Length: 385
Ligand SMILES: Cc1ncc(COP(=O)(O)O)c(C=O)c1O
Image (cartoon, rainbow, N blue to C red; front, side, top):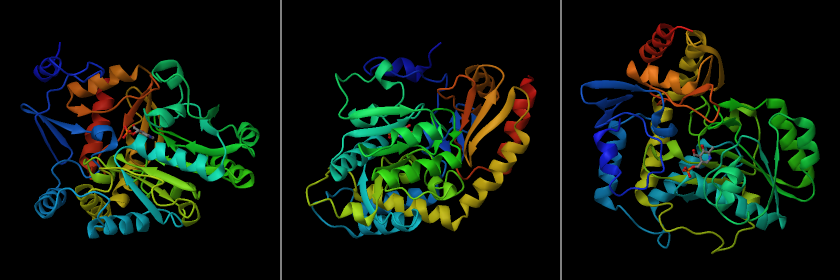
């Protein structure tokens, strides 16, 4: 049965999304409000709501920036854009000092892949099986399964080789003098929060260095404190040439960024990249606030503590194992994740599913509290095996 909003959307909107049976009217903190129901959001709007909903600092920033100037293009230099660039470079792994703001995860990856092909003069890209990088031409070309499912373009813009995750030998063979770039998610989000083997990641990084290929780490989902570190690259101790991030970066305001090394930035001349909305003042003001609040409120400490708590308490009921890092977790279940999701929603807890039909995905706000973890564990336990 469809909700009232679903029927209303169906009048004119393309019906391309599977939607939850949920009529959300407002949201605050980690809760979605649906009539009289308060639902704990362990899904965070696809990992976007890092500070939850209606966060007072985000609201204050939105209002102040909107009053001062709510749009200006990159043709005009802005102090707020400069501050966002400084804040993001300071938050990012050392060496990624150059920032290009765009609007979505796919757009950040599209630009990273373009820069890689141009800078190396090569046209082969290595990607991982089960990886997801977005729906535009280049980003989808490196997305596992897109060609068979929904790619839609007659050909990809470059040759792509997919290698199995954690297969060190295949990585060594595939990354060679013809490789422009390797693009990886260190914790594969849509795949069910599958965290790559650190030894594999270091092998890939070393193979890139030897072959002169560029390493692109896609932190669209894993970045901005979600793993309990600023970026998953920090956890893995890997130094990418480029890093892309989006989702949580603007706390809900559309915003993404491509970060790169100074050496790579030097290959780009004026006019090499561009965007109308990217780096707009609203997004930039929010980036500053999101990063500031994460630091000020020690939210990465919270993520690490409560992630450990979830691992300790949530392997109950249908859950047999937990994978992932921080607040990008996959609960591997004995029954279909969709069924577990529906049963938890009946108990006013929203979780995500993933491309793995047995994995429930958790992407809660970084502001989650211990009581919410206990509610989840109790609900899972209630579900029985
Ligand atoms: C790892 C990763 N990369 C890229 C994207 C694409 O981001 P967007 O939907 O903002 O284009 C996503 C979206 O889910 C993602 O999880």
